[in-house]
Image 1 (cartoon, rainbow, N blue to C red):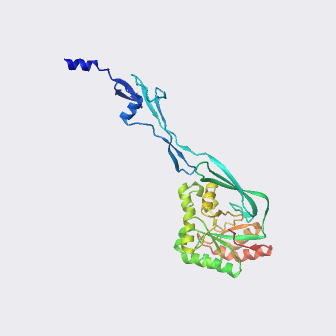
Image 2 (cartoon, rainbow, N blue to C red):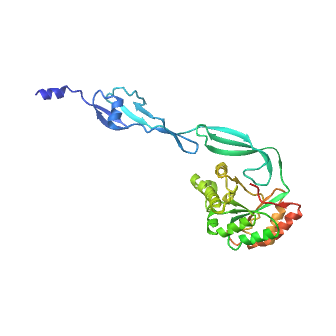
Length: 334
């Protein structure tokens, strides 16, 4: 009988809710004790760098709410109380701008022509991490366009075409720039070596030449791989450190420029495109190039990706026509 009396004297348990679920707790339980006994806590929010790296794991501890307001951990709970957890929120660090004027006259980045200017580099970096999120270049003052034209060739190395184009260029003493695709360089290393020995400049044109989706729409990790992997192959296997990158389809944005720059390359576009891969007539290709070419032009042609016979046959006429305009043929400077 005494035992029954002792039990009857105990305070009745409290009926509360935790995260919307009914829960019974002993009278006198505090918020702190409840969280400890149930092994629950808000998920902390992280502080992230501008590139997504974790700088601080518990930057925002989150909140414990008692009846909708932030709870004092030492508050004793009462019947009908409602406990809710509000997770912390991930936050990205702020940014700051850093500017500097590059020495001398520089090719633009991205480069659509051979125009040279003094450039102001505007870099956006994380306030804490210092990581670069964006780089832009603004011309300062007047620019100079050399009396020169750059012939460029995309999508090689290509058996049966690339070396025939190189032979024509050498015979006519015309330097050029070849933007090569990584997996093709790996497959045809002897062509890469012969292009380099011929004195031509080699840039990169991604690893796999994605085309179903615009290059800028690829996931960031994929873009980094497409930019860096062919550059690493050229450096490790051929001893060539490329300084020029042409994105597939000419698709770029500030993030592509940043990734290329971090890999030691500038983005190169073009100003003359005769669409030689669609035109099967050499005369039409040459006519289109010569109608549009100007001092400082960068001409887009193709040595790979398909039958390059028309481009090959148009090349002597293009070279002679450019020279008749009083323009020199050069490779794109790094």
